[in-house]
Amino acid sequence: MRKRNPKKDNYVVASKVKEAISESGLRSSGDLADAFNEMIAHKIDKAIARAKANGRQTIRPEDL
Image (cartoon, rainbow, N blue to C red; front, side):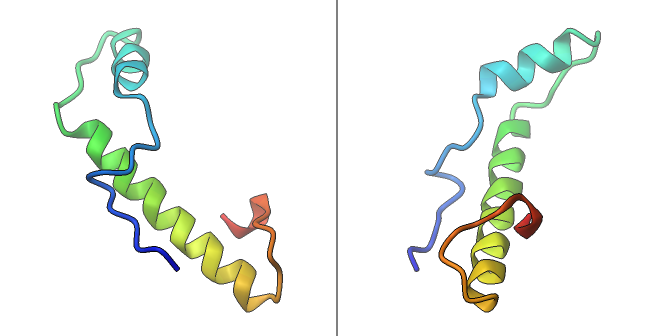
């Protein structure tokens, strides 16, 4: 399994995150998108492990 690097692998569009938050009248810190990327990378790794543990090669929503 390839080891993901959340600092290099971008799963979110930072400008869209900032836009969604600013629409609520709030501001976001500069490293918020990095935190989202790390969270998503962790979720992906857990979903991969769960699918493999269940003998599947397809990740399903319930693996999240």
